[in-house]
Length: 58
Image: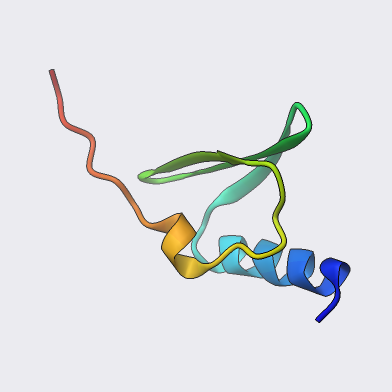
């Protein structure tokens, strides 16, 4: 699988998980319910990268 196919797969994975993919500097900000992560490259993204975190109130 080439780089463009891996990126397309990552976009689809994010869409399926209701996670937005936003440009952020030279990388990407993955933003969704319980997900806030910045990555440099979308290729190679997996489901475990989109695990939701539990926010703890202070």
